[in-house]
Amino acid sequence: MKFPALLLMALAQVFALGPRERVVSPNKAYVLYGNETAAQLWLENTRTHERRMVMEVTIQTMAAAWSPDSSAFAVSDRWASDIEMAYIYDAKSLERLDISPQILAAYPDTARFVPGPDAAPHSYCHVVRWLDPQHVEVRLHGHTDGVRVGNSIHPGDCFDLRFRVSRGGKVEQLSRRVLPISDAQGCEAIGD
Image: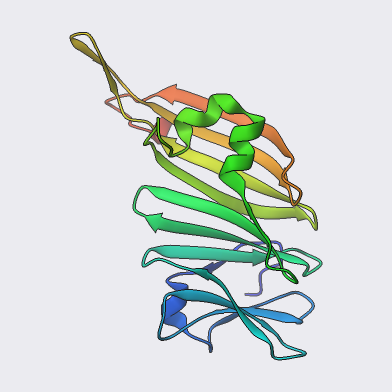
């Protein structure tokens, strides 16, 4: 079954896959691949055969997807069991846009959902798909921990937020669902 170029293509443990397992850009000018000897994601220009390291990766999982015009690619890196980060890279310059800080700048009230000095939620930020050559749909979801208030503990919240993010860093919120964690259902009620 052949999937459209707009869908995310999984690169589970990309560094272990090596140069034979490749994610080719729609115009076939670039290839993303892992390194068999080091935990790294690499980009190769298929015309010049120039190879550049994109980023150090982790032992968790990674997903990557090319923009429809092959000018950029998105990477979602789950670098711990409770944290996933998302980035957009320009294919020519490898300039990287870290998506979480862009969301925080546009919507400061999301700070409790993004790992930082004042929050340690189970937070997964990943690119769902390319909407067009300049925009991706991003999902930020997970749950916060409960907090002690006096002698009682207030339960944490489940969250599922969707955003449209441009390659220039402009963020537009598409949807927002936040529900208290229920002992009976956990975060199941928030669904996909």
